Length: 271
Image (cartoon, rainbow, N blue to C red; front, side, top):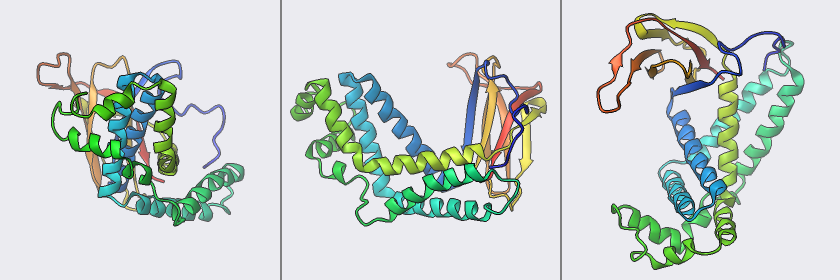
């Protein structure tokens, strides 16, 4: 939320160059949200393509969302996280180094989501749980290859309906999950934007750093130029994290530890 000079270069590579981003969540709540983000991404990719197989893959992703909602109190965890962000933003209101307009825009996105999630009418996933077709498909997915057309004729029938009709039904199943998606997207966006990127070198392909206990670091991000012939493995917890770079030119063999220095961009997301 701090004002930054428009002329400042905040990234190691120019916008024209491609970069791969590797992330590590540092707590259970952040891991949950990143998994949900991945599932929702798969849903939207399937909806955009719109083929029969994409529709089937969207159903699989919807079932994964159902499973997540059944195992974890996602609604409660998101309420706690949004409340944490609202409190943080409230304390920043009188800080002269903060862009007031940007802060109020962010509060304007946080508060409506928080109110909606706290509403008794908000029951994410209820449409999915009430669907007989989803229930039948879910039972069969536990068995490898057991969701063929002869296993669930109703699914085969539904998948072969007109694309417009399939699309309408998929969006209907997603309706009460939109609030979850919007909350996850906003929290992860704010978390990722909270970092001040630093240019770092991993000497001998290894980098380690202590985590400031007062910073509440939520996520580590590594941005690496796509021309680099290596990738990072990030590990860490509340007190420290480490990054080891590997080279993997042949997928059929074990990756090799990089021995030379590796230059990369490091983001410690602390919001």
